[in-house]
Image 1 (spheres, rainbow, N blue to C red):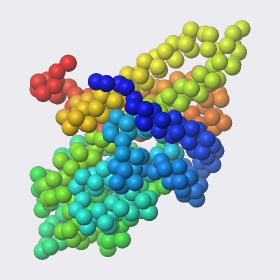
Image 2 (cartoon, helix red, strand yellow):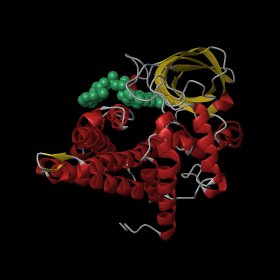
Image 3 (cartoon, helix red, strand yellow):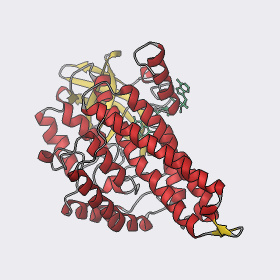
Image 4 (cartoon, protein in one colour):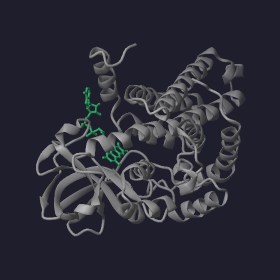
Length: 391
Ligand SMILES: Cc1cc2nc3c(=O)[nH]c(=O)nc-3n(C[C@H](O)[C@H](O)[C@H](O)COP(=O)(O)OP(=O)(O)OC[C@H]3O[C@@H](n4cnc5c(N)ncnc54)[C@H](O)[C@@H]3O)c2cc1C
């Protein structure tokens, strides 16, 4: 593997770092703790600045308004953006829209692109990806999928109950994973406009961390008619396509999380270099130095795993094992680093005078969403035991 960062990507990285530092991080002061999100007018004003700076949708090809980066270049730029948790939405590359763009780019036909993809990449609309269901339906185990679409003429009648659909409040459309005619084998992705009769946005679920503009929502589908032309890809391609979406989407999460872990430790380092305790600076105490050393090892290991996974995807090889390794390692590293940063900053770290407490609450979802750590460990070990992968 070649670890050289090209001159173009390096220049872009510096540009993104300065933009995030000067234009985005200062906006974090406007975060509304009551609603758990940024005020949308501030987001929209910042989005205009991103467009003017030529940094909009960095992950897309140049022909579609992006920066034309490959997967490793995207990794490097996303790890800069991720330094602020509010930046990815402002750059129009946050979950779930970024993963949905990837999926639509791959699988949507020209009419679907016109209707759903183009307004999404322009930031005119938002979307959701509805896979998870309340028990006894699909969660960590997708084989429990209960939502079903019955074919009736040239339409499908969709019934089901989903939750934790990020961004659903105010979204224009959802990509819904459903069985077809009761068959799990025929699971399919449907493009469902949110103004479809029978669609119910039940509630925005109260969560520990931020809500983003569209929250994390519980949804019901009561006999929703979905025309045949709203099938994404083909019938029975749902799981294959959702893997195409989830692999890169897990990786782009890792890339953003690396940025946030780095920033958290930098906040702690600044504090430790100035705070005097027991006759010397905090940074001169071995107990604190070890926390920095452990964090450096974990962040660097996670970054390299993520780049290796990105490189594997770039070479169009099977990246599932390395993505599971990266997702598990980086989500745990993020939580450990923020926790250490809070410990180093003491009561200040626990307060809202710093943003670490917000990062901490937001980060907790990383070990659950897009596959809990336990499921990634299970997948990694199964691959080793079956001989599909080796050490
Ligand atoms: C903030 C947030 C945003 C999300 N956004 C979306 C979204 O946009 N769209 C969407 O479809 N879903 C979304 N999800 C759902 C997410 O993908 C699921 O939470 C995840 O797949 C796990 O499913 P579950 O929560 O139902 O856990 P369950 O299936 O109920 O499992 C509970 C716990 O059991 C343990 N467990 C599970 N399997 C095993 C095993 N084999 N061995 C040992 N332990 C195990 C894990 O610790 C797991 O956390 C989101 C979740 C969160 C928290």
